[in-house]
Length: 422
Image 1 (cartoon, rainbow, N blue to C red):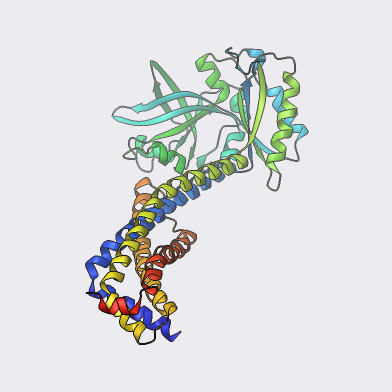
Image 2 (image 1 turned 45 degrees about the vertical axis):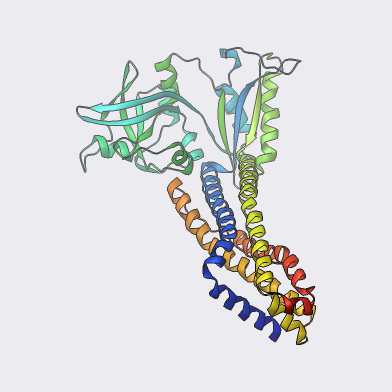
């Protein structure tokens, strides 16, 4: 233990005596460790934020959609949807009755497109979406005023709308009640008039952040919800659904239910030559996304880790130079009775100290870069303790691996030849 302590003190003293050389030797280690830490930190931050957003959308949700059947050679037909191809309200009513113990809500949504609410010089960008009553529950919308779209609105094909608090802030004076007021929305060449019945709280998730947020609340585009039957009337669309979102009850196995739901709806499509139903659990989508991001992180980290190999070679090179410079010192120590193992340990410890200090500096650099990168992308920075521990361990392994050859060369020097060395 005393010998190890003396070797550490000796190694640190040697680094202090050659600060610039030591720093240049550590540079490859610093860059390699820093790159890996930064990549893992940004990747973890992105993954956690995206996973959180998907869970907010409902990890227990099951997405059910119509898909074109494939031909015998594996290619898909190219046909348009007709009235008889779509999922109907009658199917959904029967489905909800049959799975009343497993289903909390059924959400449907169809978009008219983007538009702009206007009133004189006041405006607000919106995306107009036709929805049903279950949309609020399945998407966790928080109402601030009034109410959400209900079944009466859809049955009556009413020209009513639920708007965001951002739109209210842009379009109405402070303290003015928007409920019951009419709002005109331009979408392309069309102008629609709706009566506001509710105001919801706008929340931006990580998915929206990745797509790019508006520069200010004034230009921010938020969702404007109308009855889906009104959307059909305004766009002359055929009635029915090609996509629905089912919110299962807490504690239900959404992955198992996804298979059951798919089989249930496909009973209606056994004679349909063009379309079939596919169901996918959002929980399985989260796992797929996490797995994909993990693979990408590993691939990029491996590429970044190549600089660690370069750094290790640099350490080996400088340790060989150090052995040459200290040949007489080695000869003197061996003449005084130092064993080969002691000489070998001295140089291995010095190599490990160089890599360890470089690794610690790299961790600091990586965390700074990772925090900056995550913040720049709009994600909360998440330090990876596992990556830091691996980085420190890897630094020590590099020190031992690339320091062993110079250390072994020093240990095998003939003491007489070493003392004669000039």
